[in-house]
Amino acid sequence: MLSLDHTRPISSLVGTFVTWKGFLLAVALGSGVGPAYDTSSTLLSPDIPSSKESPFDLATKLARWDAIYIIQNSRRGYLFEQEWAFGSGLPTVISFLTQVLSNFGIQNGPSLEAIVAVCVSHTSHLLSALVLFKLGLVIWRDQRLSFIAAVLHILSPAGIFLSAPYNESTYALLSFSGYLFLAKGLLGPKRTFAHDVSLVASGMWFGFATTFRSNGLFNGIPFAAALVQELFRAPSLSSIRRRCALIIGGLAIAAGFVVPQLVAYQTFCSPQSLAELRPWCTSGLPSVYSFVQERYWNVGFLRYWTPPNIPLFLLAMPVLYLLIKSGLEFIGRPLSQANGAPASVNSADQAMLIRAMAAAQLVLAILSITNYHIQIITRISSGYPLWYWWLAKLLADGKTSAAGSNIVRFMVMYATIQGALFASFLPPA
Image (tube, rainbow, N blue to C red; front, side, top):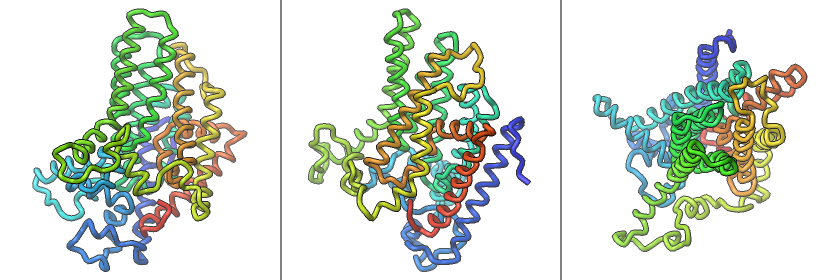
């Protein structure tokens, strides 16, 4: 019987992770009793006829939908324009690790990249849960609340996407790491050089996260809020140093998005390019990402608001509720989760940080409703810590624990059904 003991957090979290992942992978394998709706994954293994996809090939079952692009990009780089819709972070990591394994004599077979990607996703998910636990301790000083939130991240409705070759689990790890360094840099009675270095490091973590998912740019909101707050303080040596650290950190986040765009511009728009210039090359702010999202995926303001997509909006409503409800509550009462924070925590800085994190979460939810493919909110929400803390507080409070338990039941049910559909190459993805 799985034991959840917040007094032994690490072993309990690892045990929960192994149990949950074992269950989800069993669901994915169990979906092999019937043929996959689509056999595009077999393109990754050209030696295997598409009609003979093995029902026990777990790597193939997890390489569905966007994962096919990510694995192909890791093998031979970005070849076609539409492939720039997917961040370069994960393909780069997969390619590097595959090369390392090859140097150790491990044969680069047709499924090696997929296996490496699945391992990266699992490792990142486990580490992100541990980092989220530590982040909760830094911000709330409440071990039980932090532990419950970390368990909720393991049981995230993102489900199988945190095991598959997708960006979500690694993004969550990098994003939570960024917030951990940001919290350590901002909170506390002293302003040392080490605290400012922590802010710069936070920006770098967020910048790396942005190379995995473009919504990492929203992590710049806390930096902007902290800088504005700092500008209202009397100038001093420590204040000037803090402002510089925040600016450098913010620029690092922006670089995570801008640098890949510059690489694409050099590829498609340079005078040396033999191909005809693409339309986005001559736009005011040339961005291959924005162009391909609009051109190939029909992403744009209210473009997803069509009658056939109503079921997808309905599926996304529970997660949208969690994001919006928790975000608004934290903006109104940022310290509502605090359980007697010690004097070492500056409450004004803590409130500012929580409100800024809530703003980033709300921006994500609003853009998901108005611009994104709405169904992806169930997986990209996994990289935002506030709603885990909000739900953890519901579960910890006797008056609201029943409502919180119902939400957890939904998460488990959704992730289970989603795992079977995903492994069979069925939507929503």
